[in-house]
Length: 579
Image (cartoon, rainbow, N blue to C red; front, side, top):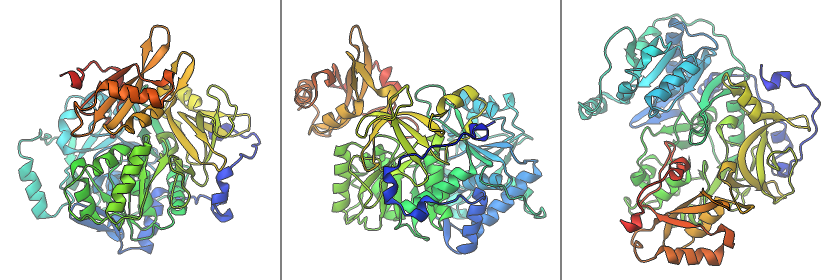
């Protein structure tokens, strides 16, 4: 039973200094009792000939998109899928991934969104823990399930080829290029391809379908696995419905017919909600990017001309390093948002300068969120923005900054744990009541709060300033040290391109900072560690100066493009400067 079902205590009003940025009507929004499928179907009625999906050379209108969803839904129904059943979707950003997701949603079933680059054992455990009945999988990674699929309860794997949605010429070219590159799946009773699957529902009679509401579970997402044990996060329909409304309120210059560049993947809450479902709910279209090439980011912009783009800071670092296109015009961009990691002051300035040079009036802003709250919690947009902040709580969300380990709200400007209240919070962790109760807690004010484990502070206007993970905070000789502050200082040095700081054990100080640095091109050997250390001594308190400086050609990244701090903590590599 959900914590929301058992809690009936009278609640106190939550202070909201950010409320002045919203109208009374916006603040009093009521989430309609519909499903994700219903929301997209309504868009198809309103905008039947508008583009819904663009993938490579393939353009799918709302009318055709919903037809494909309905056919896939009938196919799943013929296989016995019913309300509450789980089907694992393990694909990059392909049209079939979204068709599958909404087809399941129409039946009241749940999509378990899994990264196709997950290891064999990760896939196996996910299939088992979610009790997945079927799996829709990209065919090029068959070898990942070859040895484990029969150890699960999966009845059948439906294979999708990245070329399935392409025209005959491009599909043929794709298959020629892939000859011998990956192992083919066998033709037996356990496997079928996408075309065979879709034929199951082609001639089935369309029955009156049951309309599932906002409180029906819609998806299982996965919390980041770089720290702690990965968890299955169960999100209901209402979180997506609210998210679409929140983005409409915040991004007032986003209109039907505009487009979002879906670089972030469908198995990430931010990608699935903000870059895929929300555009479809608003009559916009999503440009699906199955494999992102950071070295050709500027060329991608020129080809796709998106209205908005959202990504992690490393994507924007890549953009300003691209020099493929001369006279690149980015005037079509309305919104550029960074999330998922800290956007340093130096990078923010560099990206905005890049936009000015390329005829773009947009500025990069920040958002903050996590899977347990369906990714987006705060956002800075248009005039509601302060440099360095991750914005204000999205309408319908509330935030407190508390003293870690307590429920006591801290004064404005003081760093503490970020806790979130709202209607987009997860239902809980699947089959893990203990962890759910640890994350979702009832405070003395009578509200349920999600404890994020993130640090930050709120100013008097309600703007949130993110300071990093609580687990990343370094305690040295009793002082609290925030790695992102050290990183910002070091990245301001003219020789430094990127820096990440971690805490390492110390015999009597408990922990001390250790800095991993990537130098800018052309600076290698011109600036020594001593130069950077002296720079830190001038700009940081003594206890904040890193005890060790390590040069690297690049920093390790997670599968989602964030800095992989776990790999840094286990780093035993050779210092590049000494090679």
